[in-house]
Structures are given as C-alpha cells and as structure tokens.
Length: 157
Image (cartoon, rainbow, N blue to C red):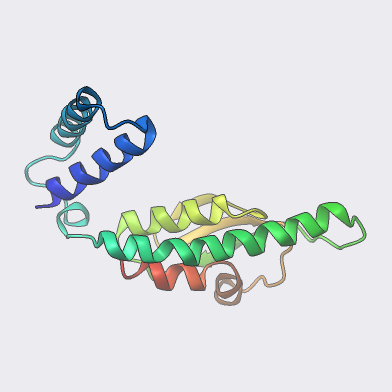
C-alpha cells in the first residue's frame, strides 16, 4: 500500500511540474513514478516507509506552514528595512518529538524555508538551527519559538 501512496505523490508532483494534461505527459509521469518507486522502495521497506501517511494531514499542514512563512517574512523584512532593529544571530539546539524520519525531514525543510532560520544539522531527535535573532538558548524554549506549531501539525502526517 505504501508504494501506491508514494507513487501517487510522485505522480501529483509530476503533473504539477509539467502543468500538462496531455495524455503522453500523463503516461510518462505514471511510468517515471512507477520506476522511481520500484527502484527506491524495496519490497521489505523499512518501518518508516511502510507506515501509511495521511495526505489530507499534509494538506492541513500547509496553512500552518504558510502562516509561519508569512510571519517570518514580515519579521525579516522589518529587520532589513529598519537596520536599527537588533539582531542576535546564533546557532541553537532544538529537540523534536517527531519519531518518523520523513516527519523530521519535513520539519527541517520547513524551518529552512522559513526566513531567519536555517537547519544546519540533524542528529537523532536534535536539530541545530542558525537563527537570525536568538531569543532563547535553552533547547526546549528555543524549540517552542521556532517549531512548536509546525511540529504539532507534522505529527499528524
């Protein structure tokens, strides 16, 4: 079942990138998606891939991510347009409660895509994040500021 989910996700990405409903494009997308799934997901897939994920929860995550993205853009734009705003750049260690590798990957990418933060490294349940304005050095409090809303939504995926 997980192969079908991954294949469907890849096919949707294909259609989105090609922006075409031409039958030849659709057939090519199906073939490419099938080959990628066949080559990359072994029959005895790891536990992380064999658990079903919820595509609707992924869609429900988008508004949470977009809200964080807009707020971070506004914050960084204010800092750029008003140089008197203090910045306190630094690297903080945050912990995540996410267990599945793909959930941690979504969180790390979301943090990196949000202006003002970049995920530098992941080590188990810890992430090292460069933050434009370090307000907290404690991993739990820094994590609350950087990732809590996104982490709650990603946990349902």
